[in-house]
Image (cartoon, rainbow, N blue to C red; front, side, top):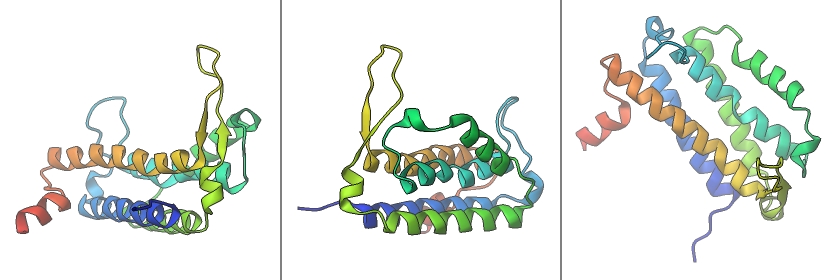
Length: 173
């Protein structure tokens, strides 16, 4: 039987982050302020958002939060916004993605089997139900979130006339 635990999640996250970094490297710095449509994030903003996005998971799971109602979301949002909106050059953005990716990958490596199985009580839904999720499901969402935005970045690459590296690699094979 195959098993997908913390080590596999960490390895998969690192692969996703490495692919995001390759996209960040492929887009010229003079295109980092490109927006595909009004009221959307620029390339620079999206990459900063990706870099900062693991902060939430690190705080929730690193501190052992078991009930999301106990979190100060206003404080978290302010920390996230400050990190996400910090001005960065292309080189600084790539370094930030690498640093945060390494930090979160190491964090994932250290999560135990029992921690992955723990349930976290979520905020009540519109129907009044109070759902819960496993830490594993919540940590997996960090990778899924990044893949969502990476797909957007790959479409932006096409709009900029850049063939995404994964497409180039497939064509080379």
